[in-house]
Image (cartoon, rainbow, N blue to C red; front, side):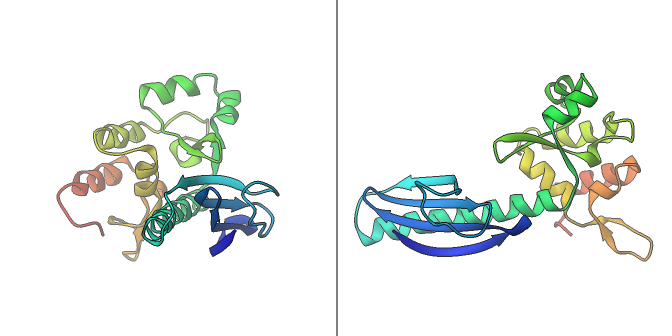
Length: 193
């Protein structure tokens, strides 16, 4: 077994890429409490694995794929860290209609660490969806997964500004649907700000 790289993830956790020779496999692992690089033991969670035929070229390709997975995992962890999240189970305990909202496209949920998570910014104080969330989901529906929608809401958008002109992420403007809809309309016809 050979450790290729490690990266720190939010919450004191670690991500690592490990290569084993029998079978020839590259692994992307999540370690909850420090580093334990054994994909078959310890507390590591296997996020991805890829078996490949032996040889340096195949191994390099597999490792390159693992680095792509690592980048996606880091982005997902960053998105999760930027907001308060409820599992769909938690939200369903508060609002019985939460699963219906998800099916109707009134809220979205991302799959993270084996559970569906709903960003709290999608909901009023009474845990009902902001209407503008459905508009965003509809606009993204043809070309994006829930993580793309979550990323759009999570990062500053030049079409939505705070006092002083600082760009805000759309998640901080859901109470101003005009601003969110304006930024959404600019999404397909301008550069991302």
